[in-house]
Amino acid sequence: MTRRSDSVTIRDVAKYADVSVATVSRFINQNAPVSQDVAERIQQVMLDLNYKPHAVARHLATRRTQTIGLVLHNMHTDFFAPLLSGIETVVSENQYNLLVATYKSSIRKDSQPPVGPHNTDGMLVFADSLSEEHLTQLCRNKFPLVLIHRTPPVNLKIPFVTVENKAATRKIIDHMIEVHGRRSIIFLRGPQEQEDSHWREQGYRDALEAHGIPVDPRLMLDGEFNGETAYRSIKNMLANDHPSFDAIFSGDDDAAIGVITALKEAGLRVPEDIAIVGFDDSRLSPFLSPPLTTVRAPTEQVGHTAARLLFDLIKDQPTEAVTLLPTEIIIRRSCGCLHETLAN
Image (cartoon, rainbow, N blue to C red; front, side, top):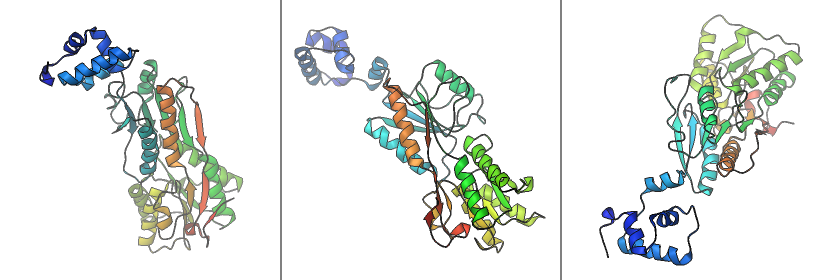
């Protein structure tokens, strides 16, 4: 009865097992019960014929890819390593694969995302990677989605996971004003379309207002959560007539690296001349010179939580709509403090 495996079909298996093609299909895809006697008979025939079900055929029958997608606008900074680690932990626990793609709707307006219902069972969407139109279309098709560091558009019920930005930023600006007497504080904006940037700026503005310090538009510069952009912004400012400043909120830790480099090239000391603080507490922050005072964001937990919510959706289980994870201030040398502490 032995035949070459590439010529064996499901009909052959059904014939020799003396069952219907539908029964063999149910056994292979495990989408309906089959008696133990029949299952053993089918299994033996498949072994005898050296029959191997085609992966694509199984997918068409089950409509499951055993893969989830993650859409990011880029992967250029250290920020994404812990995020991916948190996601991958949950993906592995569920015996799924992770398909990661970089895509930005604002740039590629007329194209479709490289991941979606055609090759994944659900998708994690970071920040502004997908447009409102794309999200609406996916929701209309009832495709499982979870947003990361982004709230859903109005009228779209999509679970999302983010961190507390506004209060933490205000707290770290308060620290520079109240503890170190800094009053001319540069704010480096993140990407305009990202909500993290918006809330961090609001926290900065609230801190200045609470201390009677007017917002100076000349101290609002582009940082883009990017070391090179932050470096150029500070270099350009120092090369031209500029208002005096004594501190910088870099937007995030990656931008802080560019800021420290630009200041040192100009002969300015951190923190003696200019205090610097960041956001995220990336893996390099304790090892910068000086070590960076920053806001610790639970980035790995964000990835872990978002992936868990997505699998809840895929399994039709109850899902939390909003997850806001807390942040905390980590005091190091760059703000002017002598000892590392956790701010109260």
